[in-house]
Amino acid sequence: MTAQATGAAPSAESCFAPAPPHPFLFGGAPALARARAVFAFGAAARWFPERPRPVRALTGAQQQSLESLNALGAQLTSGFTGQELRRAYRWLAHRVHPDRQHGCGESERAHRARLFIAATAYYRRLLALVDAH
Image (cartoon, rainbow, N blue to C red):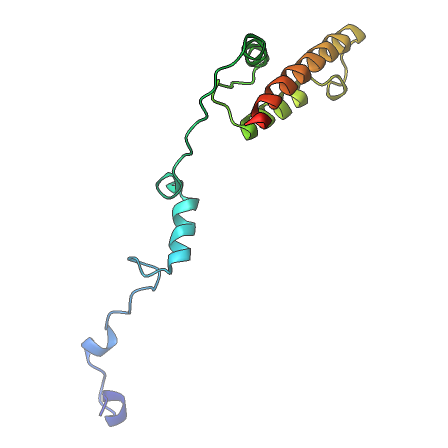
């Protein structure tokens, strides 16, 4: 019989019994929850290894296009992927497109238009290289 059933005062041991541990502490989480936690806290590199970078030899025109995009701020290497190239081009287009710059003079808009046309030509030259592989 328990202490409550007999009317006696409960003992100290029954009042302060340890609570069961939380199911998500100490590795008790389901596998999917653990994977989400690992991904959310930045340790995803252990779970998803980086893909090998493509090794390619660039022609003179392609090397010049890559250097020109980098001069505009693209930060690409010769082992770029298609996704990296597209991301860098979109960032450059957002930065140098003449319609995105409000409040600048006509000469500045013309200069930005020339930069945008050149960046698009460089991008298309390098995109043909990526799409060929």
